[in-house]
Length: 435
Ligand SMILES: *Cc1c(COP(=O)(O)O)cnc(C)c1O
Image (tube, rainbow, N blue to C red; front, side):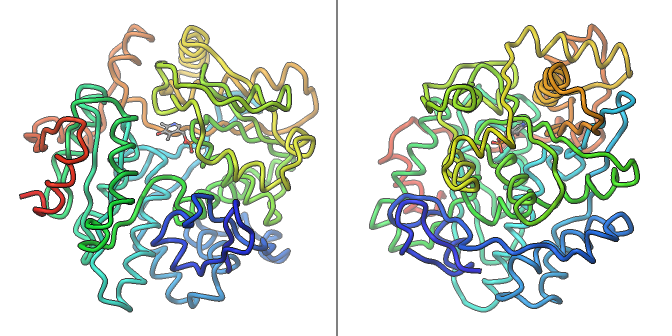
């Protein structure tokens, strides 16, 4: 598969270049030059396939020109020791649980695949890679887990001090080995700025092969399409069209759903559900795209004012607003509406949702008000509710159980390097190998 830059169509890259560069040199985003279709025969029998078989087939269809089937199978085997089950919530609505991976958020699907495919390519060269990643919470945990002890790769995570949940912080700061956490006295935007500056610094680039693990990397986008196929496989026997509601921030998740659709997955419609950071729902309504500074909400992993994958979402529809709106509807909700949805689903179905999941649930209900057709609704659950335990317990007025995987973290001492939001301090840490 050949990739091109959204800013300069003639700027091309191989899969390996697209993965290790993350961004094209003109600061566009990498997009597949053409999108191959999944085979009809595979779709006809998809209900009999496991998650790993589906992931293998989708990867082979997209990347088979560059990696052999058996290499793909070993990448998938290594990445996925967890599943993406659907659970019935109302007679027609199902939740797609994407939190069964090591960090208990959907970002594990992207991070684990990215780590496995990077180490596949590294086996063929002798490059040492340093991954830099800024996180507002869930990305750092997934990337840390994904790359933990992967030979030839070290990971440096920057996070804003005091602005991630206790559990999220423990996920970043307790692994050690090849994972280093830097606690920045500043905001998430400061962390992101430091990472961007590092990529532009000639001395750092001379010393390391720097790579990015944020959601603009094509190696995170591709694997996020797997679970749309897997959800369809589980629901196919109901014989109804499927509508996906996606809780969105940077719009990597939704873009991956659209990729699956463009590959031939039968999807009736997508719902882009956001909190008050609503640039995309407003664009869908009016045709005008006006990114804004981000607002703080209780679904904080979606507090993104200027979504980095918006350009990709548009490009999948040939930059034609009308085509986007035929396939994607947008809704946004405030914190009060989000909490009300959490209580409603807990009351009616005894099901506990994180606030991001609640936004997606609410989006589906809103869509149903104006679309009475007979369809199966699927809302994506992007994180386990225990990752946001204080908010969830306050909202539901009830104690919830913390899974063992998260509970055990709370007793491990955190290890981080404290740093002011200052590029020279960051650079000197990196130049001195952090020690
Ligand atoms: C990252 C994240 C999102 C947003 O996903 P995007 O791909 O950025 O749109 C939603 N929910 C949770 C829990 C997340 O961690």
